[in-house]
Length: 81
Image (cartoon, rainbow, N blue to C red; front, side, top):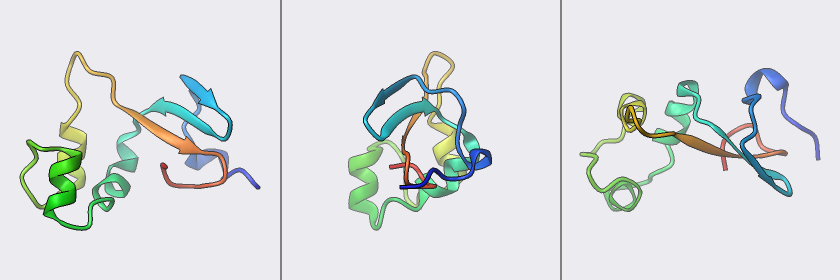
């Protein structure tokens, strides 16, 4: 296993379990998250109040002032798990 280039990975780990780590959400990853759902049903399971289609702007808008958006990153993957 090799780690992705540091420039592609967030630097602050909030928690770790083996090869997985929880990090603050980076808005640059919003397009990646927006591609996760394959259809409207999956979008509903992920974010029931989000109207299709899912876009990067909608992913960024999920964050609230009192929230703490996070990503789960796996060491051997460039994209979030």
